[in-house]
Image 1 (cartoon, one colour):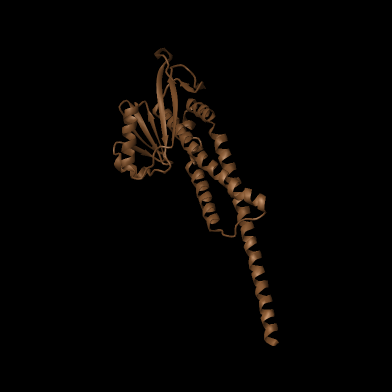
Image 2: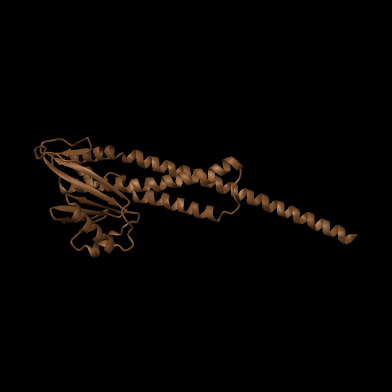
Length: 265
């Protein structure tokens, strides 16, 4: 969104999220100019800045498209096997001295954009981009669970006794759940927000704008639903195998009786 210069200094944040996580320790070797913190890798560039996060996201502040593309290529070289970008998130920040922090029409307005505040803004935009990716894969898993497994159980009253694929699906679901909970634990309030009352309000405005809390809770609820459904299907599959085993034992006993009877004759 373009705004006239009279409304204050305009900053643009662009976040890109990937499927893979990123190791800040490994990337720090390739980015000697960057400063590494526990939750981000940061370096200044051409009047702007770049933020890299371990949960597979990179954020550009005030950098043109050509520079962003160049830095994405640099990241791909530094992290071989990185897939194409899956999610892109944007945020406009208006810096206007004397204005209290607020969010209106998708634009965050504040009196001053310090480095600490820029870090919190970048992290929140990155989290929103990463969460959108997780929302996609969790939704796919939810649909698959409901459509392929629960629907069959509802219609036929049973499931296949072949549980290998089911076990693999459960493993993928558990892995996804752990990844979501681990990668997005940074939804806890950053330290910068505790030290700066203005930043605390900015953080609250950002979380409300991107609806991070509700989206995170919705993800957890869907993951729990998927897990409970898979556990139910797995229990049914196990029970059916036990029934088949018991039937096989009974048939063997009957066969032994019949053979014994004919042998006696």
